Image 1 (tube, rainbow, N blue to C red):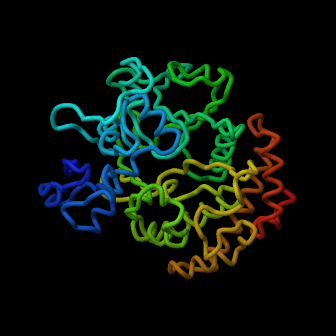
Image 2 (image 1 turned 90 degrees about the horizontal axis):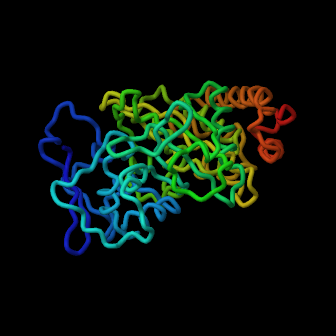
Image 3 (image 1 turned 30 degrees about the horizontal axis):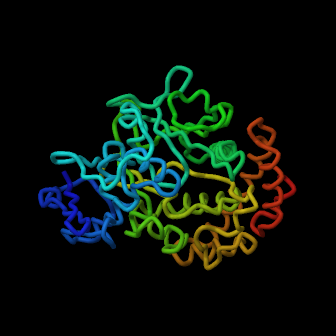
Length: 394
């Protein structure tokens, strides 16, 4: 046990670190925030809010609405949500009731079968997209039964973003062909997902990704995202850090050697037109419980395919958020700011973009690459200074 989450009569939620955990040497890392902040008690910002580390374990947006209406949890009841999904959180952390049942502040708005409540809805991944935890069978995917935990995540597309599932599969496959570490992924029709409570058409495509925080024998591997690391609420994932600072943090936590990988990932972010790579889409794993390493790539989407997304980066890179301004000089300056080699950063960025163009030539005629993706990517490369010299290959 690392500590206790408690809710006071005024709905203030606090986390009390267990003294025995604090005395452990060595001790498994709960989160970098707790390693740096030695307070024994940490509280949420407002009544109902869990401390930021735990708040970042809770889904947002449509996914949160979908779960709370079925499990009978008030939208502002962080602790109630954590109690409901605490056995299947990201990483190795679990949250268990010491006794009794949680006093939920709401009732289910949608009648839900007990088997559904006890299965794939009782898991949590941060983000706004509708997701389900699934078990893979011989030819289909299933909602977990009682006592089971899914090792795959199914991501259901938004109506307002046509072809989102295919877009994410293509972008992740592109990254894989560039040599990035990417979990196993699949693209399946919704009809091949058994028991998923969703009313989309059966031939709608669903993006599936294998969880990198679970092993084949069910062991949990701890992780945390960078919004947890900096100790901020999830709502501030776009405005509290820059890619320069994120790179510096990764070098401090993982080691200086991660500099090259961070530059490669940032260059691919530019190449793939991803304007949603906020701090919750960057994470570290603790395979041995102690030492951090970057997680495989996840949530890589070519957001520039849809005109409703603006053409800005999620975070600033060397002072700019505009794709239309991004050039190799920004990578040089980022390197200077974090203590890396500017010319090495420039070389890595150019090599990554060149390799991305070559990999795209091999991928662009794949059946999962839609006409919209292909045309929008070509436009994107002609508008970004870093990419423009190689845009003819796209």
